[in-house]
Image (tube, rainbow, N blue to C red; front, side, top):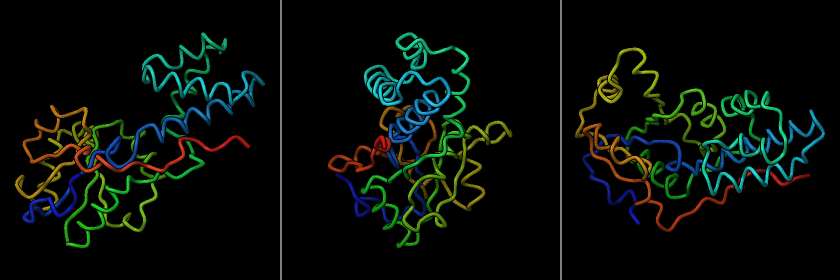
Length: 216
């Protein structure tokens, strides 16, 4: 497992993707599913929230996000009109439980910040969804040390995201290290900067985050 001690001392900044880098993506999604299931039970009385939550969790873990609402709608007879609400909740969910950073990432960020390095969130995910996630992260005092850049927003304004970040912060490509999700090596390489998969830091660490709150 890598730690801050393994990082080139000449690096001036660390860039982090969000999902499965700072915390498991499912820690957010399963709370969204929990909230949606409870909303549906409150509105329609059926299906029971606990049953729908369990179904969504299992379906996500086996099949991923694609077609998840349709699977649930077929299994429980959910009116298709609720798909809009299901999708909206991914953007606006008010999480009942904080998102906990992987301990290895928290240690890495603390050590880097203590050593005078700059910390950036550099995410290519949907800006609205990613922002909502970041609002619920337990930063352990690091929130003021982290600057966030949404790549999609920068592209929409005509910027090349990495070039804009570097110029804005007086950095060169050799100054930064990008910590990326293990399933996106191509994008990391395309940035033209040094990069390491988050898994290299997380090999023996795990989140203690509860996926969704216990049913009361």
